[in-house]
Length: 422
Ligand SMILES: Nc1ncnc2c1ncn2[C@@H]1O[C@H](COP(=O)(O)OP(=O)(O)OP(=O)(O)O)[C@@H](O)[C@H]1O
Ligand SMILES: [Mn+2]
Image (cartoon, rainbow, N blue to C red; front, side, top):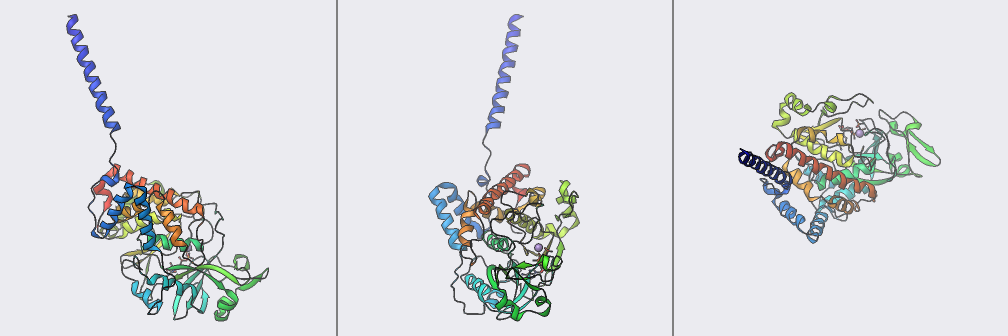
């Protein structure tokens, strides 16, 4: 009797030990990192994948990767164009991208945007923010967004607070190139002499809004927030810095849509997406074409891009054909110590992303993003474009994005999260 009890207790004890050991092994088993998953790759990014494998290897190879990326995205300011810069740029416009991944001509077109004579100046014809609509020699329309803030100024308040940041528009353009989201029109920095370059060619409507304050030339233009001298912008003397953005070609008819993840812009009033974890499914149900075409993935790409630049103001968007164009990126780089997680809602609510986008993001991890962008931005005539703290914020935000993608994979699996060829 006594012996039987002992055997029974010993068996139970051994079973408990085995179960505990299995549990410990399972819990401590290293999770497969995303790089170890065997993803089916698009041919065009196979070369990038080789680089990824290298970057995971050693510091020297990481340096090599950064050097390669800098070479690829630095533009040659002195490049001599054979054709009109405006024809070159108009020919770049296609149904998925507005410029090529890399072309020596890019430097020539950007130089023309920054230096060609202004032949006509008018008030911006759309939007809530003060801007100029200029025509440059050769008949090219551009939008000029003026400088309101210094590079170190910090914008406090709601995530969409403050006037436009012209340097943000420039940085966003180059970031979109680095990430191969080439759906942002060409943008460059420029200092205009308002007295000599703008006033002589200004329309009556614009001219009427010019005034002087402390010997500086100022104007208040025409827009929703443009009221009178109190809402005007001033240069230093006659000189006003700003961003010049190429207008898309006239044949590019754009359609405007309300962004499904738009904010209410009312303090204390949340939009539907803000407290509905199933919001993404509802968006897809409501717009079938979002899922069958590129739209939802364009929205996710744009959310990633906006999270990096800190733009919480994408209340509407434009499409050309099926493609979402990323216009108006100036509500960005306002506060380097604030990361507005809600901008990522399309990513964390849908948990779907283009496989190419994810692979390209991987190239820039561990500080490569700020290093490459810093060097590329040095080529702009009004550089430095971003303060160190904004560049550091990019690396930190990229880590958040990669972590979020990893969470999606853990939750839904690789096949669900990564979408190829759409
Ligand atoms: N480069 C461009 N090419 C073609 N159209 C453009 C370009 N930039 C702006 N637009 C058109 O002008 C509109 C207003 O531009 P933008 O969004 O930059 O102004 P905004 O004052 O910031 O507007 P909002 O305050 O609504 O954000 C865009 O929605 C688009 O239709
Ligand atoms: Mn805007």
